[in-house]
Image 1 (cartoon, rainbow, N blue to C red):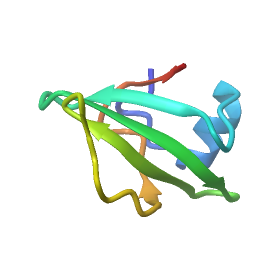
Image 2: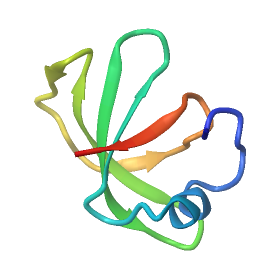
Image 3: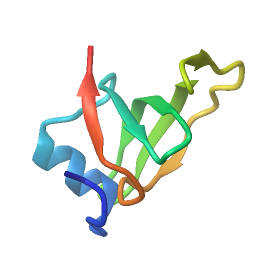
Length: 76
């Protein structure tokens, strides 16, 4: 469970065994969002959005993510 875990995203990823290339899915109440981890730093995780609400996203520039706003799990 990542929701309400306010540690840095990179720390959570390392603990879960998530690495660059891992796809995660989480839902904040607006349909599932699927992201793919593109980089892990000491504290920061970068990821690009692959889909939101089961619809592919045209923009997928990597951005920093927090994992504390919804429960994320690996997919694929």
